[in-house]
Image (cartoon, rainbow, N blue to C red; front, side, top):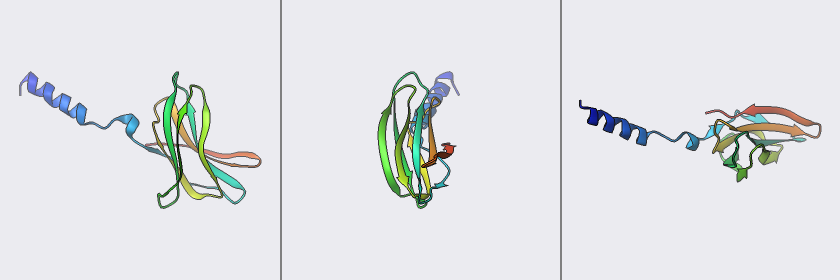
Length: 119
């Protein structure tokens, strides 16, 4: 194989590779009782505004609520939440190394649980 054919093969492989930022991330499922709520939380540690889509899904994968938000640098935002949601999880698009997603459970006393999203 010549240098040109190797370079062409490498280039076509790179062009066919999936884009990291386009791959969705998911949290583990959580349960929020009648007096609590579950939500999808985003933290932007980057120096620039990033666009993130968060979808709160039920146990069967159906969308309960979704939002796309421009998250400013340094911000921590709850994009979607729902009271009394049991077995729900968050799906995120647009997360990066410095833009992180979480599912959280809150009640009137404050935050009960926060779990990170992963690939």
